[in-house]
Length: 128
Image (cartoon, rainbow, N blue to C red; front, side, top):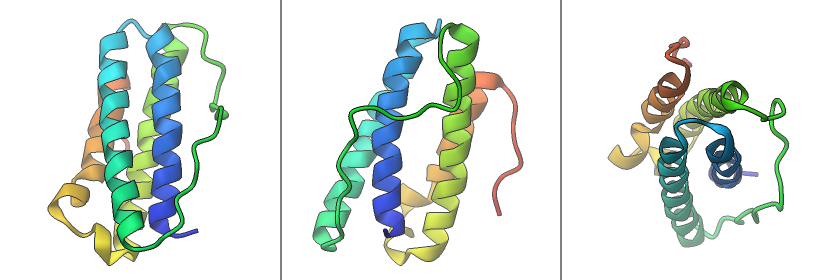
């Protein structure tokens, strides 16, 4: 798979994950806002993949989460884990795919890091 296809697959997973997070997090409206953000980015990435004739992965019916979500604390942990993983994935994808080197995509690692921070108020090292 290409970096772009991987980002689309991760965006599908993020949309799904935020649906679960919104059901348990006290900040359910924030989770739904982030879900909408990921849905919009997924649609942009799909349009880019279509333009470049890159295969588009289909969304799965369900995705494995890193831990079982059953309360606010686990929901926040899953959301922060998701965004930290996306931060690293975006940084790696941008470094290998020139089509992602645009103003709208170059900010995505930082956006993911900020979303992760919003859930746990813990900043991780930025991926290099």
